Length: 222
Image 1 (cartoon, helix red, strand yellow):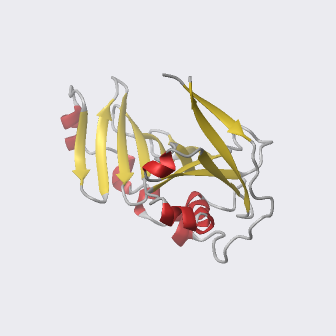
Image 2 (spheres, rainbow, N blue to C red):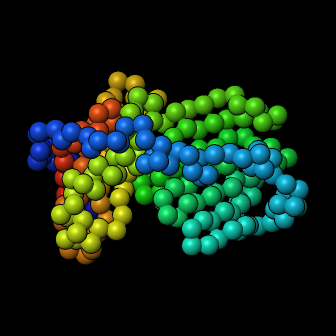
């Protein structure tokens, strides 16, 4: 059975909603001061114990797994090792790629509902020095978490009525599309009644935080 997704440019709201006070450049909301967004000294180079455990190992190696955080290593091939860390409360991933000798190669951050890269991707040489930085929120004043908080206020009635449990996030990447407008797109995960409805996409201006409009994605059966 195939599913055809038809984007209907049905603008439900044409008036912009002002950004709630205190959202712009607020690191407490964006969580950029949290540990998940930092690389500590121990993460720059894998310790020998982990390297020994990964040697000739098939599958993943779980280091930590509790209700808040998970860290596991993948021995991808003869040249690369990846450490995938997950902040379960925030729904964020920190993916760290290492060379086979244990030196860090790069790190990026992922909002897992939608697999949208957020914050910055940083590349390193074998001495652990930064060689390249890609800012996935380039051109944005409103961060990923601020956009979600704005939608929580706009969609408050639906969130309560349909028992919304999650938020799916995507945005225009100005590194790939420099002429695009900075915009966050957010959809909701809810109960069975909500899931039977057309998917509603909330669009938020990435500079001002204004609510632009909603569009719908209708699922049809072929």
